[in-house]
Image (cartoon, rainbow, N blue to C red; front, top):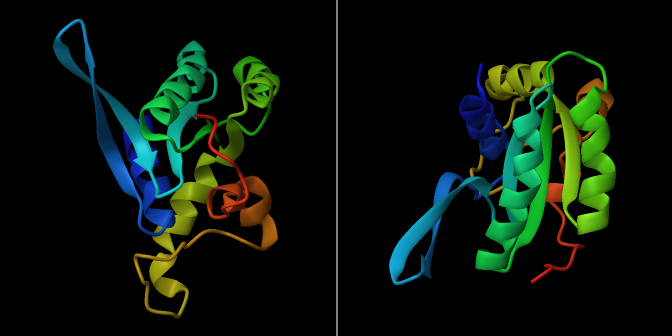
Length: 155
């Protein structure tokens, strides 16, 4: 499963969110846009894959999207191998220094949580969050920082 599919699943967990949104801006008399992996009413979220140097770009993308929208920037690093690699290790201090919310989330948890959504026994209201809050799933993919409004936008 690739970054786009995982971003769509993550976005589906966050009530009222939209996957693959575009933010437009003008530069040098030309209309341009960026693509945001997931956008909620409070956050612009970029998804990064572990083991790829392109994960570093997610911080830049999240910050620029936050600049355009006035929302809180976040990066979700998808852990596909179960250990903290080079780019995951780099990401925590860089996001902390730049004021970007950083979450490390296991790919297996994302896929399992999505596959079992119909078994949770309550009808799903798409305006509310459906995120792991207890047990191993919450430890391996703690998305609660994205469902609270405690942070202040950077821009």
